[in-house]
Length: 229
Image 1 (cartoon, helix red, strand yellow):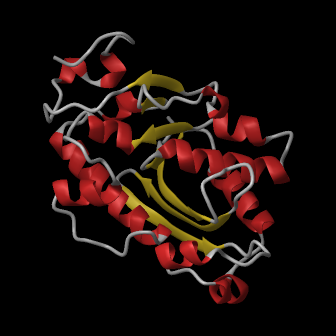
Image 2 (spheres, rainbow, N blue to C red; image 1 turned 45 degrees about the vertical axis):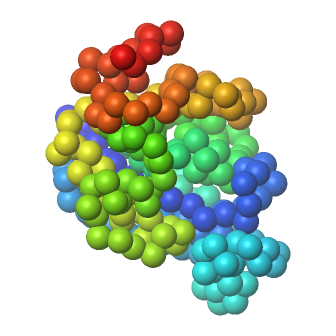
């Protein structure tokens, strides 16, 4: 019997381009059998000064990375150790964080990176939220929708804790999160197939204003061309 491990995770980065920018903070909250068994939070010394916009957004400084940061290779090794079979990785806007994790792994384990990310499952809570609530769908909005205690957003460990409580609230609202494994919704106006992963099913998911979608109409159960009515 396999025990399913959930890892709620979040990254802070030097920018938006996963090929050229770097992770500067990675947080992971590991949950096994409904219990939090590990909290992980590390700064990454990327060897370059941060843009002032990133510091204003995250509160992370060059000094933080110099004094507290570890090398990227250590983060890559930690990810390789944690991303094992029967693990479910959960993030808000998971495509973004998955992409940064993939390219980090690719730099240090070029022959293994594809297999590492392919052998675990991925849940995007933005996709889930779009089937539950009206626009907007940021993590801060989910926290408000589900009356979660507010946190210091844009710091990975705080975002990760908030995400965990949002997921619990979603589960209590309707227990169908497992159906969203490896299914990411996207805005039909802005799809860019160049950054997509072959093990993820990408489905068009426009905004709607009908709140909680009927259980039979959630994105994993809808045909690719069906619309919410």
